Structure formats: structure tokens, C-alpha cells
Amino acid sequence: MTSPLFDITGKLALVTGSSRGLGLALATGLAQAGAKVVLHGRDPQALTAASEAVGRAGSGEPAPTVRFDVTDARAVAENLAVLVTEHGVPDILVNNAGIQRRAPFNDFDAEDWDAVIAGNLSSAFYVSRQITPGMAERGSGKVINIGSVMSQLARQTIAPYGASKGGVLMLTKGMAADLARYNIQVNAISPGYFKTEMNTALVQDAEFSGWVSARTPAQRWGLPEELVGTLIFLASDASAYVSGQNIFVDGGMTAIV
Image (cartoon, rainbow, N blue to C red):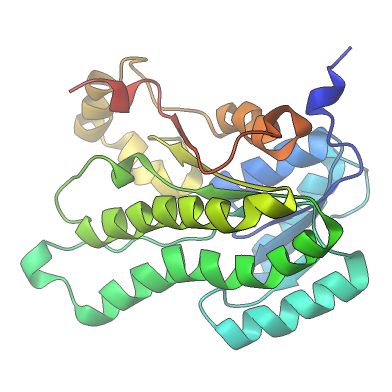
């Protein structure tokens, strides 16, 4: 029997950017663990497919969905107000939505910088700001921000991405400092290199995949479902006294030089 410490049955979870990729894997894992999951995305077709898939993994009914731009503070506020009215204040918030733009630093366009910071960092602030007051009023809540190994490591052409994910980790600490008094735990998960549909080209690139395997002590790419165990820990009572922390799920990549 599963320990009740890890039981999230019936908990309401919102996962941003969950119509595909790691977000969909995280949402599916929460549904399999018994949570009621609200999916978020911008592509209606992808969101519909994800809703049906997550429903099959959980209750059997299509998962509810919301569509809005996480970089638009007004849209976030308006749509999350509707979500709370219809479903209640989420017990679990996973800030997963994000984007990537690549270019050498000296060629990086200011608009692309703004887009990366807005998509990866400001979005987590906008969404959390709308959800955590209700958590505070209730006296409980879990916020899990999705970071990256690139918050600690660096590679050419993605300096703004690393800066945004470093910001996510400091936002996590700052939120934890402010919200722990309300029994809200705020933590981060920082994935390494994972096989997703958005990484297909990189996975199929023999040279790049060889670099990932050589750089990672586990000698392979991660599988999206391998994030779920850490997520359940941080979403459950098992982490009731854990806040402001970042857990790297990276096959040991950040443990070595």
C-alpha cells in the first residue's frame, strides 16, 4: 500500500504548458496518482488531445482545460479567476510553461530576450500571484516551478534561457520565504536532458546525443515519466517541511565537472 504521505487523491492541480512535452508527462503523472488535473495550453488541438490522454490516465473523463497566454498578466488574471470560480483554488500549481530561443550572445535580439524572460520567468510570477492568495486563505498549497540544469550550467547560444531559469530558482526561494507562514510549500524541479517531441531533432543528432550520454553519469537521456516521482513528493504531504528547494533530476549531470 502506498504511504498516505504521498497520497494526492482528489487534489486539484493546475499544470501550465501541459498540452505536450514534459508538461503533459507531469500532468499525466498527477492524474495517475489520483489528482484532478486542469491542463493549460494555447494550441486548441493539442490541448484537446492532451485532455483525452490525461483523462484516460486518471478519472476516465477528459481533463478540464484553460487557454491563455501566460505572458499576458491581464489574460492570466481573467482566466484564472474563471478557473477558481468553476473548480476552486488549486491545491497544486505546477509552473511548467516556457520557451527557448537560440542565438550567439552578440547576435541575440532584444525582442527574443524579452520573450524568453516573459515566457519562463514572468509567467511563473503572473500565474502564482493569482493562485497563491487563495492557497493562503485556505491555509495550504503546493507550488512547483520547473527550472533547468541550465540554471547552473551554461552552453553557447542559450544565455538568456539560463538567466531566466536562474531567475526561476530565486523566485522559488523568494516565494518560499513569503508563503511558508501560510503552509504553502514552494519548490523547484530542474530537469536535465529529456526525450520529448520538442527534442526529437537533438535526440536524433548522433553527435549531440553522444555529448549528452558522455556528459551525463547515467549515460543516457531522461524519460519524461522519470520526473513524476519527484513531482509527487513535492506535491504531497511527504514534503510538508520542504520549501525553497531545487531538485535536479538530471542523471547526475550537475554532480560532475
